[in-house]
Amino acid sequence: MVLSGVSTFHKAWALYTNCESPMIVALSMSPTLHRGDILFLSNLKAPIEIGNICVYKIHGRNLPIVHRVIHRHDSERQGQQQLMTKGDNNALSDLILLKESNYGRQWVLPNEVIGCVQGLLPHFGIFTVYMTDHTNLKYALLGTMGLLVFLYG
Image (cartoon, rainbow, N blue to C red; front, side, top):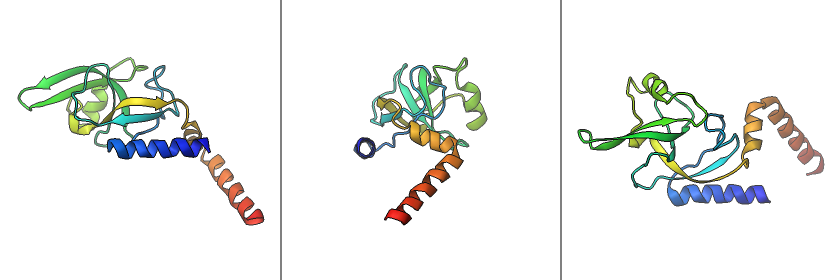
């Protein structure tokens, strides 16, 4: 019951802010964020500030990246903000990652930002992360549930 309420609130927030809210699956933002944390994002058009935790997606990557903004460059020539990010648990900024994925670009551009973190539910998505990491367990659980429905349904 609680999980369905959390899931409903999570989807309602995504609709309200017009911004999909991801779940943490990596350790790059530890100790601030942990695997299984569900993030609530907002993509309001306010300027992104240094220290904001933003979610962005770059070309060639399937999963969005959740990292903190460590430097901001306001480009007068391009008329937009350019952002440098870094995971709290990473030794280096995302410069190498960006150069590999963005055709040599060194900055995250505003159109790549999905949203900035406004809140989170700690560890509420850990079951989903665990099922993704252990697919055999996922299939066993689904098979057991199907068998129970068949036997008792």
